[in-house]
Image 1 (tube, rainbow, N blue to C red):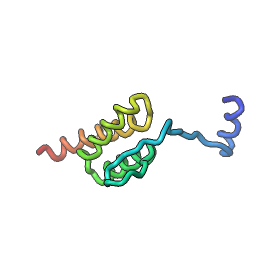
Image 2: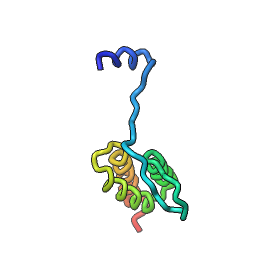
Image 3: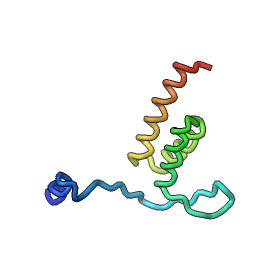
Length: 92
């Protein structure tokens, strides 16, 4: 960190989050690999579209596979917050 700190401070470096592996998801009938990052992006898109039930299902799968990864935990926190507010303003 002593080497990186000046670079980060001066804007010459940034933090990166690396996915540990690519994950194959067969959701469209084709065998095209969907990376960890793509899966997180898909969940983020579902949250943005307020498709909370769909996002929750994908999040639960992702959390089972990567229980210690920061991205799914952050997305789950976002989901829980949105779901809480949905229940308050749309109690159906």
